[in-house]
Amino acid sequence: MGEYNKRVLTVASGGGRRDELMLLRPTLEQNDVQHVMTDTALAQQQGITAAERLPDCNRNNPLRALYCGVRAVWMVLKQRPHAVISTGAAPGLMCLLFGRLLFGRMLGARTLWIDSVANGEELSMCGKLSMTIAHQCRVQWEDLAMGVSSHYRGAVL
Image 1 (cartoon, rainbow, N blue to C red):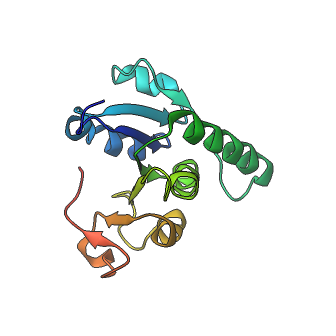
Image 2: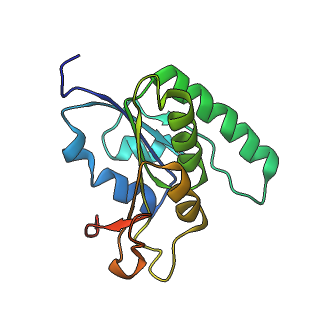
Image 3: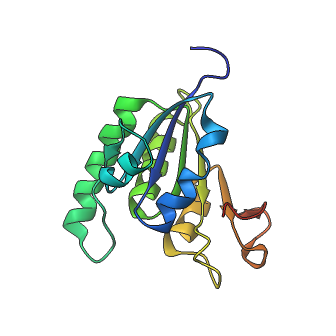
């Protein structure tokens, strides 16, 4: 593996979050990217044949969230990423958390949260939580930037 060929785990739920993450694909091409989505059929529509499925979850179904968390730990352990990038939601936050906890010091995994452009009024709940977990948190609306906690560098879309 070359100096610039890093293992990157990208994680997104369906819909706009997945679309936003797919727009970042060209910037990640020089890396060994493993895509994780809540619907792998959507990945195939984008020409991604090796995407892994992570169950969707939210705070309203704690058992499903627990199952998603266990699967997230397994995916992070299996992939041993140098970086984890997510546009959300809860499954992505879990991968960021475990990527940072399991490999933060040992392997230097970096974590990046990009809050969805759909959140124009305030950060999503996972976006707020990501500010305490991720190495970097990006927002897509200038008004939502919070200095040290989250930064605006433009919109993905």
